[in-house]
Image (cartoon, rainbow, N blue to C red; front, top):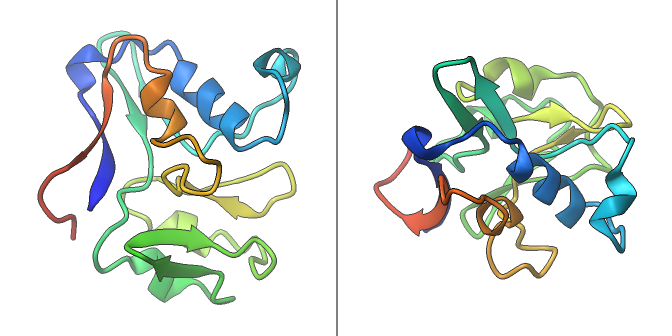
Length: 145
């Protein structure tokens, strides 16, 4: 299965992946409509002055987040871990157990995570298409635990 991977050595820490992600999942007509607003991307840039990298869901084969969700809001559908936002109670258990730091609450306190832009018809994840340095790729590699 294809997944999002980051080549840290190419990441500039520009946060454009976050803006492209937030826009692709926002239902807004123009990216400029995000200006001045707090964004809630499903990918996050981490790091310091020496190295930066984007963090997103790895869609693990045996995901502890799904097993730990007390509301059964997380599920695996076609090898993609999805969040049923109507079921999520915002308890943050999934945030605590995810070894990659891939989940975060949205503006309503409901969990969200990368779902590979499969619902928003981008063709590939928006973070990949919006990365100016090609540090984020969407490709098939080995299996993630």
